[in-house]
Amino acid sequence: MQNRIEITEADLRDDRLILASEINDGAERKPAGRMLADSDHFAFVYILEQGESFQYVILNDSIWPDVKAAFDQKLPVFLITGNQQLELSGFHDELAYLVENIKDNANYGEEMEERVKRVFL
Image (cartoon, rainbow, N blue to C red; front, side, top):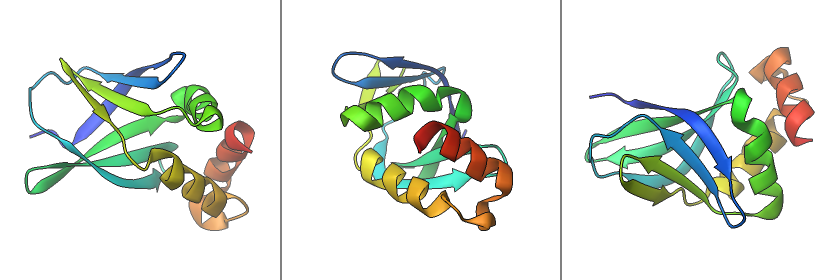
């Protein structure tokens, strides 16, 4: 089972941010409401529950401008996998926490800190 869901496209619409992936397996997933920072790959990672395991939605810095726009407008964020659409609950609160924690924090690495500052602060 693949435990990483790479986002291939972010589409900012009037009322939501749609995150698209190439996953089309029909598996049932639930939002865990938690996010991590992957400073080695300059990404935020939203955690999903799938049965007894976890999957990780990878939000690379290439889509951060759309994520920032949705964050500023407090638009809901949805993940599309095949025909399924899943709202990522807690997304904005988790992102706000990570951005604040990364700011002026050398533990994430200078490059990650700079990229986050450039887009989110």
